Image (tube, rainbow over all chains, first blue to last red; front, side, top):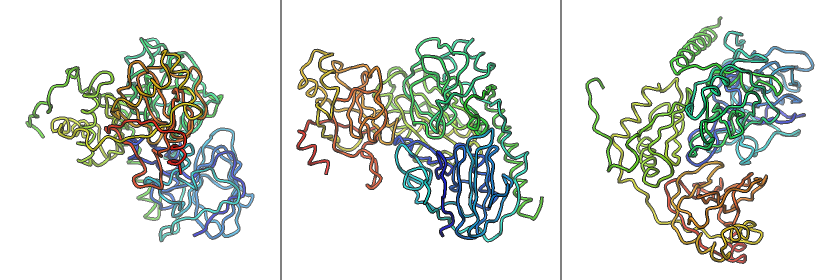
Length: 317
Length: 243
């Protein structure tokens, strides 16, 4: 079903889902949405599979016309969203009629915004996922960023008309200068104790050398005990590697599957949304946590989300 | 599981593995299991044996398994598979390692057109080592290489066993665009760029084979654990094989 015609695509709009897992042994990056929480909650609000494909809109400059009646939600950090010129709420399900025009523009804070459509965006699965991997020219819509004139199809949505709104308490606690939790390691012992203290106390500024692959930070330089190089090993979204010059580089959604620099810490998956939404020029801090604290955080969030969607399905909350 | 005792890790003792396995926590969604120090074929084959053993048991919540030089990298969904269950599964697999699962299949022969514009660094590599270009080609095509791992970009094989006379540092300034098929050298490794990407390896030739092709089933030509060998072809043969 043809659902959406793109009129303006902004600097970087791609189709992304929850990632292309299972081909990392073949060197295929996971890719997928930079802000997984925004993707997952937007999808669930519409009755979609949490992993369904949506449009990831970097910054803004996006405008599209609906070709049929459709249910949608826009999630992310602080974009300006308008339907036919009138501001509408984020994290809320809406109904659009054929001919309605939706625009998404950058607000003052976040970077990555998601347009979720009931049923999910229909593009071919490539290696089990609909996510776009730009460097490989595959996934999403012909392996590329969207451009004006593109028409997107959706899969059939659920039988119920979605209605609801994700409460603030369930959204990632975005902030202009967030504190993100990180588990030390996997090569904590490769760093001097002072480096460890500095990493977990000083603010680090996000630089413009940041994209879907990684984020270069600026702040206190981190000294290695010996060499910065390790025998190449697996890499994943959230790993904080530190090359020889000592500035941390956080690997993000499109990161390569292997790397050879020592990693001082790994950002907690639940806090990756806060990290990726931090714009260049703003700063963030890292807070050390262990796996038990991570477990508690997952359990608490899982409970809150299950409860919310249970009540939503029953007509509440 | 209570009271159950595990047999000692299976398989013949491998030199340098007494201090292993070593579990490295990689955040709340990944674990690295190191099985040895450094780059060593026996250690790497053990990594692949663990990879295959775990792949067979299809534990729920495991998102991906990635065998690398000396470690297996596991990504998991902590809401579906707890850290304890993951560790336990790895322990069970290490106790039931099927060491008979060694490299299988014939050696894959890969044609390469060496030098000139397809291998722009061949002359430099030869000069650096005081070798004739033909000698670099002879030494590069002589060994059977073990594929330690696939990484960097889809289908990029890291090959070990390069002739020590050819060990060459990376380019001081990486190229922003390395063409697909380029065959390169970096220190003691050699490898092939499957897709156009940035890269700092010394490029000595190019293969007309497509290492990664989504229109082919399977899309990947080379897999970790395989054995490969290069053979030299002329520019004319390269052009013919490219079509």
